[in-house]
Image 1 (cartoon, rainbow, N blue to C red):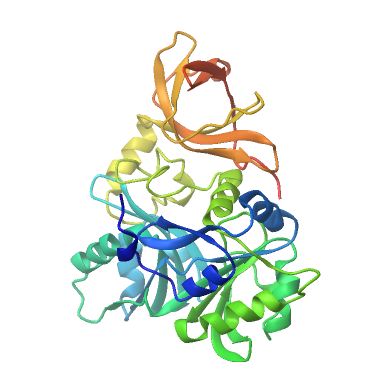
Image 2 (cartoon, rainbow, N blue to C red):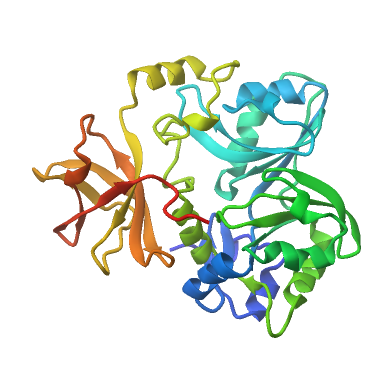
Length: 368
C-alpha cells in the first residue's frame, strides 16, 4: 500500500479539500478523483464547462540557439512545421522506438521551448534530455514545482474565461497560444489545447498566482451557472471518448508510435532517434495493432487487462483502457490485437469468463 504521506501535492491541494474532493494517489501526487460525481463532471465538460487542476504535469524549459535542432532530433514529429505561438503533440522514443513519453511542445520563440510531459515520467524525461545534451549553449531546466497548469474545457468555457482576460480567446486557433493579461496578472500563457476533445483553453501560471486565478475562475457566473471543478475520473472518461492515449496503459516503452496508431505524428522527412526501426515497422507492418471498440451489450464495461479472443476462443489481444461512456451510454475500450488477419466481426472480450462480442470502430467514439 502506498504511503500517502510521501505523495506530492499541487499548490491547489487545500482548495480541493475545501471543495470536498475525494483525493487519491495518482502519478505520485495526491489528486482529486471527483468532487460531486464523475458522471456529472463529465457531462459538465460536454455540455457546459469544467476546470481541472493538471499542475502535476511536468514542465520543462529548453532554450538556446540550438534548442530547435536538439528537439527535432529527440522527438518524432516535425518541429519545423510550427511557428512561435504554436504547440505540437509529439513523443520521445528510445533507441528501439519504444515510447519514452508523449508530450506537448510550445514554441515560445526560435530559441525557447516549453515542454509539458506526463507527471509519472518527469525524472525519466529529465535524464533522457540531459543524457543527450552535448551543446553547452543549450540550457535545460525543470520548472515543474514552480508553475501550475489549469485546464478549462467545455463548449461554454471560452465565453466564461473571456471575462478574465484581454486576449481574444475565440481567435486562438487549435494548438496555438498567446501570452497576455489574465485576472489582472501580466504575462500569462493561454493555449487552445486540452485532453478532453471539448473546446477549451489551458493556462500556464506561476504558483504564486494559482490560487487567486483558480478562485476567480470558479466565481464566474456563480451561483446559477458556473464552471464546475472536475477530477481525474471524468478526465479519463472524457479522453477515452476521444480515443486519446494514456501513458502507462495505452503507450509505453514496450510500444512504438507505429503500433500505437500514432503514425500521424511520426514524420520520416527528418532525422530522429530510431527512425530506421520505425520506418521498417511501418513498411512491414507492426506486430501488434492499436484499435478501439464499443460493447453494445448493456451494462458490460471493459477494463484494463481484460482479454480479447477470436471465435475459436484463442487469445488475440488485451484491453489497455476501458470505461463507461456517459455520452454513448455504452462500454468503450482501447487495446491491442496481435492477429495479422483479423475478422473484425469475430472479436470478443472476456468479462467474468463470458465471451461478449465487440464492435471495432474508429476513434473518436463521439463527435463534438
